[in-house]
Length: 64
Image (spheres, rainbow, N blue to C red):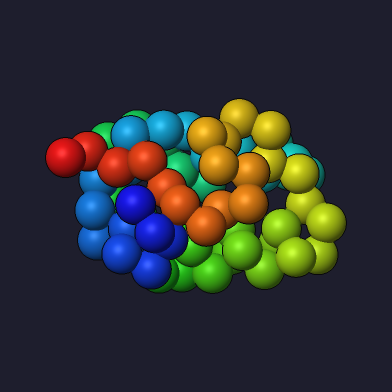
């Protein structure tokens, strides 16, 4: 689902940016706008996100 539309939906994947390597999103959590902004600005700054389905963060996996 497009990132903007994922806000308020339940995550279906773990997203652990590195650094720090701590999950920002875990399956079952509601995705917030603050988390999407954090991940996208971090990605733009060079943060690695190795475990996400879409490394560009244009889409997020959510529950149907």
